[in-house]
Image (cartoon, rainbow, N blue to C red; front, top):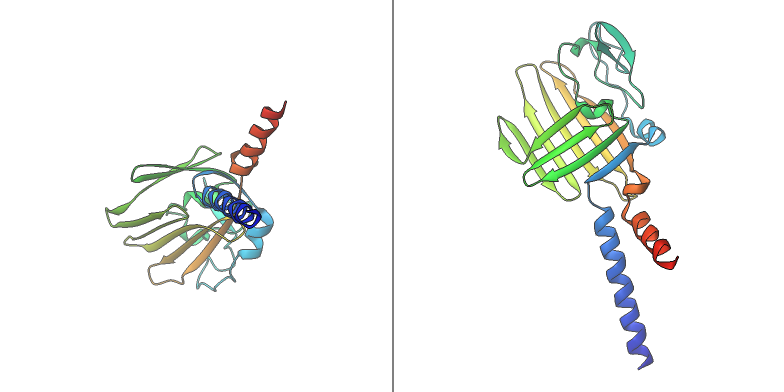
Length: 194
C-alpha cells in the first residue's frame, strides 16, 4: 500500500512538472531583452566589402547613424531596406490567433507572421518555435524564434544581401516575471492562503 502511494505521488509530481514545462515552453507571452545573454550569443562579425564594413553595430535612422541597444543590427549599407522589427525590441509580446502570429514591441512597432506560404514568405509554427524565410530582389531573410533549454526566447535573424555576405543577429529574451506561469501559480497560492 505504501509503495502504491509513493508511485502515485511520483506520477502526480511528474504530471505537474510536465504541465509547468509545457506552459513555460510556449513562445506566446511577454519577453524582455537579456542584454548580457544577447551579447554572449552574438556570432563573430563577417567582413563585408565596401563602406558598410565595421559598422555592423549601427543602423541608419532618419539620416543619423545610431547604435542599437543590446547588440548589433544590419549595417549602414542596407539603410534603404527595412531592418527586422525584433532587432529594435527591448520588450516584445508574442501572440497567436489561428494562423497569424503577431510580435508587438514596447516601442510601438509590430510584425505579423502568417503560417504557411504567403507571398513568398514560408512560415512554420510550433508551440516552442517560429520560423520564417523569404527572398526579395535585394536579399534573403530568415527569422527563427525558439525557446532554449533554460526557458529563454532566442531570436536569430539571418540576412544575406544579394551578392553579399550572410550575417546573423541574435537577441535573447527572458519571460517577463508577471507573464511566467510559475509566478501566476505562486500568486494564486498566496491569495488562497490569506
